[in-house]
Amino acid sequence: MDSEKGSEPNWYVLRTQLKRERLATANLRRLEGVEVFLPRLRYQKTTRRGRVWWVEPLFPGYLLAKFSHLELSRAVTYTAGVSRIVTFGDDTPAVPDQFVEDLQAEMARHQTDDEEIVVNWKVEVGDEVELGEGPFKGMEGRVVEVRPGAERVSLLLEFLGESKPVEVSLYSLILANPDIPEGWKGD
Image 1 (spheres, rainbow, N blue to C red):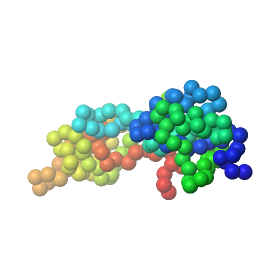
Image 2: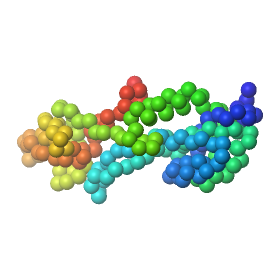
Image 3: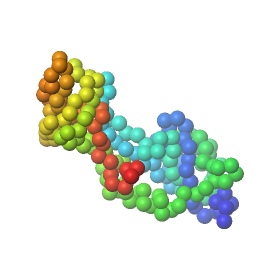
Image 4: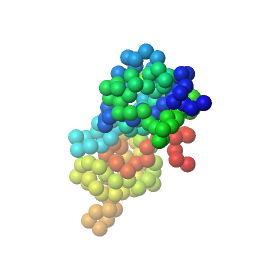
């Protein structure tokens, strides 16, 4: 059965307006007969302002919505924040229910808030990292000690022709490996 002609609710991918995923989600949730899923990642990032928490969609510019295409496609398309329903030519493919259920289950295992996963930094002794802030910004070094309780690491930095140990904040590292949940890695 062609997914465009079905009156049964199916999951579809929606393209949102630039940086309007949360607005589109909130407006779609007001429509009767529409279920919305917007998985997000929450992580700390080093910026010029220092360490800040960022929340970004897992799929930037897209969200998943379950609705009857026959009955609600026009209302969904014209919802504030939604750009369009993703199509391939004349075909509007439905996302398999099992995929969405698996993604929701994975999110539920890791979330601390509504549809968010907190991604923690994982730094180990021997990792090569770059500093993103402070007087040594841009310098690269090797981790020699990790103190997670204090959120500090000791690095060996090469400067003035020698290797010198330096202690810095864990969050000043910009090339550390994030702790990505199993099954999400591109392996």
